[in-house]
Image (tube, rainbow, N blue to C red; front, side, top):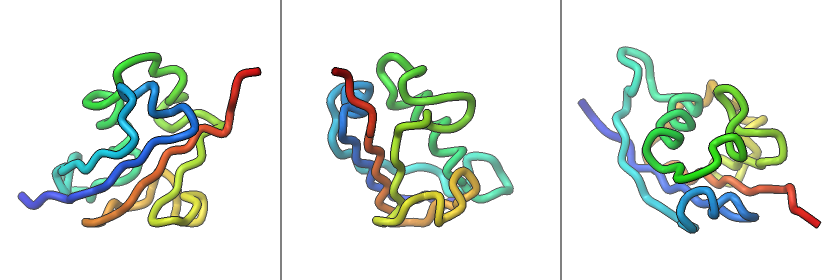
Length: 103
């Protein structure tokens, strides 16, 4: 089975939930859910189980990211790419930015 290399980046406070990691290159199976290709939904659930260190409720709401977290796929808003249905490709650069800030 082949794998996908993906670069994840976290900023705006999201990195605090991931043990202060700002960037991480990961390698995941090209099909976490055989025989279907790996989608953003699969990736987010994988991140919750393998990378998220604390307060999952601040990162996720149901099976997706919480409102207030901007997700970019290769510098494009994930809303333009199909959000959870986007099929991860080798070399993708995925960025998670919190737009919510305490006062």
